[in-house]
Amino acid sequence: MKYLVSYVFLILSFVSFGQKFGYVDMSYLLSKMPDYNNAQVEIEKLAKGWEQEIQKMYQEAETMQSDLKAEEVLLTQEMHQERQATIDKKWKEIKEYQKQVFGFEGLYFLKKKELIKPVQDKVFEAVEIVAKNNRLQIVFDKSGELVMIYTDPIHDYTDHVLEELKLE
Image (cartoon, rainbow, N blue to C red; front, side):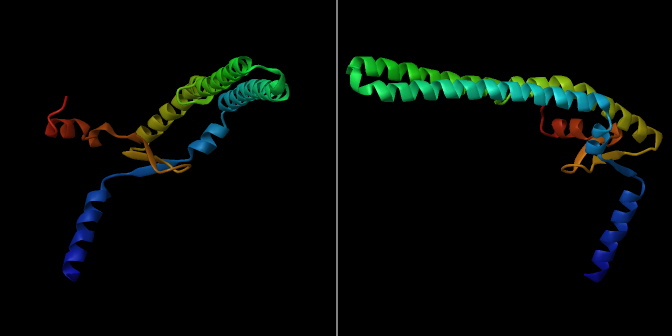
């Protein structure tokens, strides 16, 4: 057993000997880029505007609800139901708008992608150049989860796996 463990470590050391790895701190790099900081400011400004707009819509719906409650005794059942339906419709519109702005693939997400992606692309291009100049096969981002942001294509076996799965 002792020889088996030694043998495995010996094999692993030979396999990893030829590959060079590196890492970068994407958060630090992005924080040093004026374009990224400007994009962040613009995104925060837009988000605050949308939040204020949604808050105003909430207040309007709450006012409508409290007005209905105050006038409830004066209204017929039919009038009460109509106004309640209007209020319910207003709440539904607010939820839809909130989803449209802050939901998955919403305006906030799209604007953030539009403003930040070009800056990230510049960083990725620079990482690729550095990786090639330093003959690194794999570059990791240490700022978040362990993510490969550059790999030497020679080590990409995706096509081989697709062939094995008989997918194209």
